[in-house]
Image 1 (cartoon, one colour):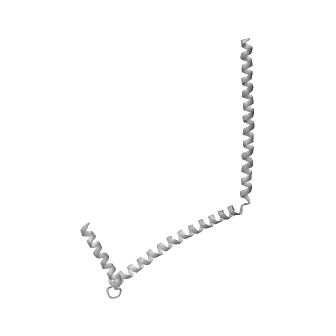
Image 2 (image 1 turned 135 degrees about the vertical axis):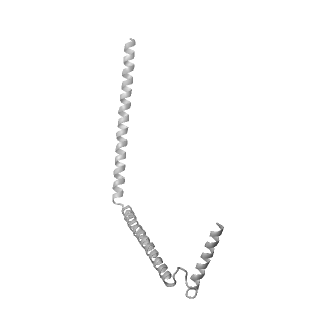
Image 3 (image 1 turned 30 degrees about the vertical axis):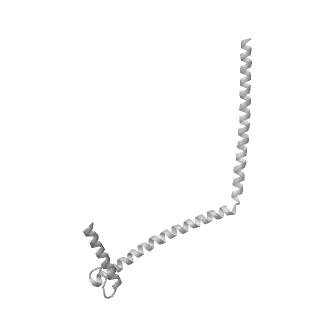
Length: 126
């Protein structure tokens, strides 16, 4: 009798486990179908979306312009340094040093002297 009760209990437990597994499998399939349909919906809606396509085009154009701007900025920096070096060489050739002429360009001469005095003070103090 005890063996029959244990067999019946085991049968009941295995039946419950099988039913639970069946319902869990069914729910998992249903959620998979829902996810698949949601994915297809989003894909379909975004495929024809003009705004998304326009945004990606704008982003690509902006990136191209940014790269061009960086290239132009680096070229401009190189040109400025070349021009500065040419001017420096011309001043050195004109009067033998990089000191601007006080009669021809008094503003540049004043700026140079102020800078020199400042550097002399910093050199003595520090």
